[in-house]
Structure formats: C-alpha cells, structure tokens
Image (cartoon, rainbow, N blue to C red; front, side, top):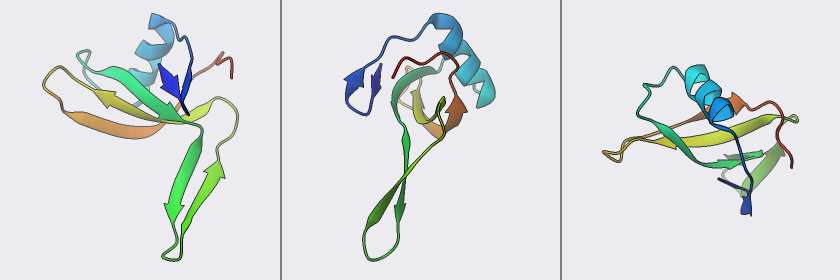
Length: 78
C-alpha cells in the first residue's frame, strides 16, 4: 500500500481492522493513505500531521465505490 508515496507493507489483519473502524463491508480494501490532514484555508493548503498510527485512508470496492476516513493502524513501520 502507498502511504505518502512510500510502499508500506500492512497485514491482512491491519487492513481488516481499518475497514472495521470505518464500518465498511468486507468487499472494500485499503488503496492509499496519508499521514497528513490537508486543509484548504482559502489562501492555501495546510498540511496537519496526524499522531503516530493515524492515517487518512482511501478504501475502494470492486465496483469503484470509494470511502475516505481517519483510521488507526497499529504497528505501522513509517
């Protein structure tokens, strides 16, 4: 999986727990994530670093439906 452009290995259990936190059905999978919350202030975009273990994650299913949210992934090696 990509986290901020880096390929990071996550286990099936970590991915399952992330989906559970978002209350997503089992057909969703984790596709991308970032350790920063991006906020558009109207003057520019501010990057707010999240606490260790939290990421803004993108989930997608086979039909292309996407969901986004902040989840905790314990044991990330960043």
